[in-house]
Image 1 (cartoon, rainbow, N blue to C red):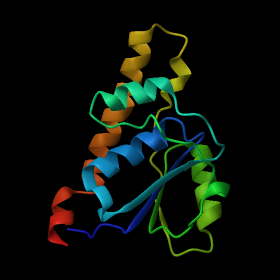
Image 2 (image 1 turned 45 degrees about the vertical axis):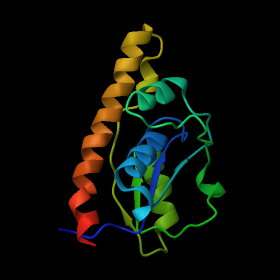
Image 3 (image 1 turned 90 degrees about the vertical axis):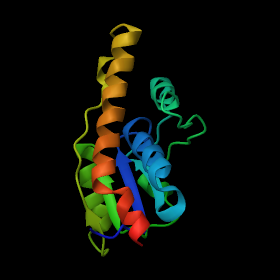
Image 4 (image 1 turned 60 degrees about the vertical axis):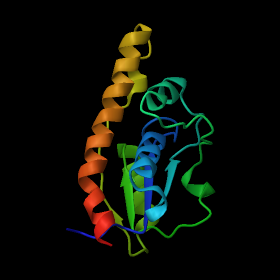
Length: 148
């Protein structure tokens, strides 16, 4: 089983939905065994639907403050996981001179359906949350944490 990275950065377009979800889930799964952060290509406010669906699984991200790549205080990461095409380009640019792995996880942006009724929108956010949960559990297995 592969060792866990020591520092992971999630990135999306606005740091308001996908990357805060991934950050919160990985923190739930691995706590402080991994340094975890998230950014956006641009800084955005946390999305209310995102807060709601994360709260459903016991993760409070209501105090999340969006930040952009330029706001990073530390740029040392073993792994950067961009969740949108725009973030992928920015991550590749940032890591060009770093010994850092980039894994692109193209993830649906649930904000594109916000003109629908509330339950439809919530279900889209839940789907993204659940897909991220499954992918994070597979990529960062709990057994690896116990073996180290």
